[in-house]
Image 1 (cartoon, one colour):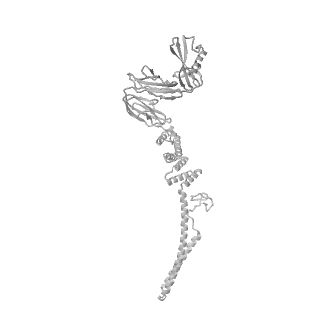
Image 2 (cartoon, rainbow, N blue to C red):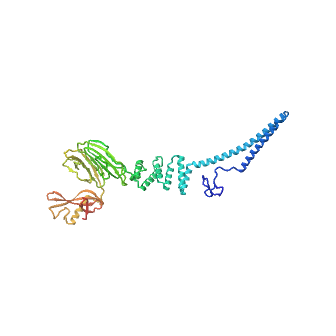
Length: 491
């Protein structure tokens, strides 16, 4: 559209020229010639009506003798008058129809642009590009009024509100899009990310956690799992049990779990969960909550348990049967007031078998372990069996590792031949493989023990230990520090 005053291009829908301020008339002015024509026609019709009326009055006053002639003349004049009127009415009707059509087309054009979704969306985008944020916001709100609901316009309006500094409005709109299951997945994810960023910028991690938990676990919220603080899950439902139960606590969102077992409410001063809680005979109320890395606490969950256990519980062997490819420890939970015994040859364990006291190094190859629990009264529970197969691809064999230690002992004159003969003792020293293990920050090693064998063949450990790398063959003497951790010494 061109401004009639200054000739500048005017954006569609504007009511004023942005350059000179001239009002833009939506309804076009009448053409002067058409207006004059209508005026002239109406004037002629009026003159004809007056002339006809005057003539009729004059004819009425005439003699009755001229009645027949007057009647004929009157009919003639009436026909002429009607013909002229019909012509004028026809012209006026045509002009009126043209004007109605013009108005209708103009109204349709303006209404179409006012209500067209794509046009309004493009119009808002142009406002944003031009930095006209308030105009853009008005246009997006207009779109929402037209459609009632539209996630795309809602998301864009949230962006505009955020750019204008209205964080509260932006936050509400972003959350509305996230909750809209009908919206596109990318739109919901971007809205969720913007929501997370706003909460993080404010340091309001509690509200953020509540929001994410309310949205549930899905592809939209799972990428922000670290901000959630889920309440603890209990491995056993509350109720009555006829055996001691190893209650385990966990949280989908991670973090520390604080708990109590005496019915009091836990705080950050309470016990931190790290291993199963064994509930023995009696009544227990276990309460727990999660504290995540952002200082958000979950709701406290409490469950009641009644335990009526007569015999010791079946041993809880934490290392399950299966194939393993790296050094592994076999761990067992020992209940208070009980002892656990085990065998490695497939026989049933008794109190005469090996007693479990510390984690067991899983042997190379296939093995079968059986465990049993005895209480203080000498009663035993059921046997737990585990089958393992430890297979490690190494560059150094057990035999090579043992020979490496023997060679080292010869080099330092501890022994003088490969059979372990020594000037120090009557008998010999043997250097035998014990197990494989992983030593923190060092790697995987064969552990070799020094054993003294006397002339009668009786063997006794000297306490000396050695380590040989499974992959590089490097050898070390081992010691223990004050925390009972391995320490390497040069050979």
